[in-house]
Figure 1 (cartoon, rainbow, N blue to C red):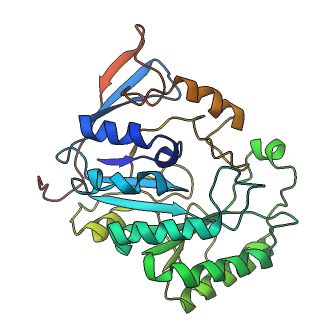
Figure 2: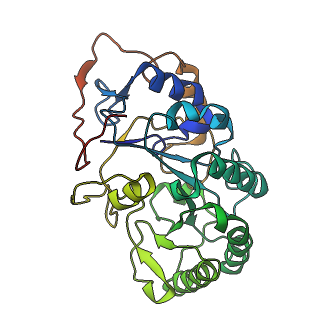
Figure 3: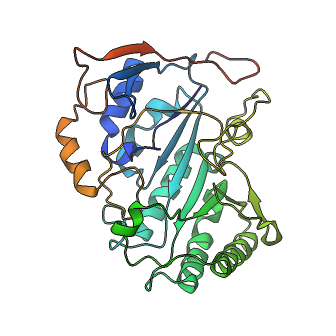
Length: 308
């Protein structure tokens, strides 16, 4: 089984101590977002977890104690660093600080376990096609020695964005092609393997691969383990990732990113934080009398499971 720590919230940035406590105690509880009274327990032990996948915009809080997880588990890290400033990502460190943290992370876990995410790519009057290309080039020169790959995607025009980002300019096919050509050319020049994530369209002419960002091949190669040849169902249309179990919760990320799909609104996350207890097995709150607790299925994807 693959554990995902960052699909619903930036667990690493805001809930580091809770996350470390869960791995120390060896289990976690996850509340079903569609059926809130259904709570699933997952064991967090090396014999039940094939790989722990992280996704964050700021690994700085966890770096001093990251070894508590990496010493025991196979891991992979997605680090999102974009061109945007506080106007769009108010809770995210600046580009320079973020790149410095990524370099430190690479020193701890190795470049083969780090993917730089440059997504979502969106346009406004401030963030034009040209600005994206210029910023990406500056970042690529710095990050290329420290990353395994770069992953990008174009913003999904879901309904909530209409109210959260009225300044958003819809991406035309010409915009997408110009962006793909620019990013692909820069990545090739800097020796970076680049791929799309959940984005429709074939950009292979620009040396851009179409693949899942969390596949068994990627995780296996990064950690030197052999996985079974299994179908990757993905989580939505255009996704080619292997199934995973997310231990976070929606409406809990305080980064405040205007394009966020995981929060109903930024204020909700700050309100929910009041219910966070770093000692609880749940990210928010505690088990209630009317909750139904079930044991999650945890089947290995490995050909030969090794117990470290």
